[in-house]
Length: 139
Image (tube, rainbow, N blue to C red; front, side):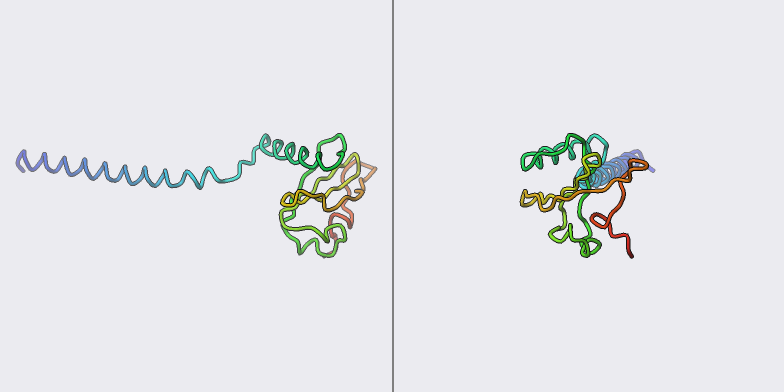
């Protein structure tokens, strides 16, 4: 091989290497929106979400002075036989106040409280006791 052919070969390798790096870089950049759109489920974020929800619902009614347990309605079929959840819709928030023994069903889209009911606590150990109001224990 001549010196000119070697220089040409090196030039082609540089172009090929640069092209591969550029393709990899573009691919990685295309993944950023997917990565960043994923839900950040750190405890701080969950606390912020609960705080914001309590703030919003607190403008609609007086809430107990405790941090609620929050759940989201995601499967209406499991709730269909329960009177408390008759008006529930996908995405509604459930706020459970164990010490105050209250459960609140809130619709964030309409910004309305859809339901309010007492919630039983197992007095022996102070833990939440599933009742027919919240959970259907029958299969």
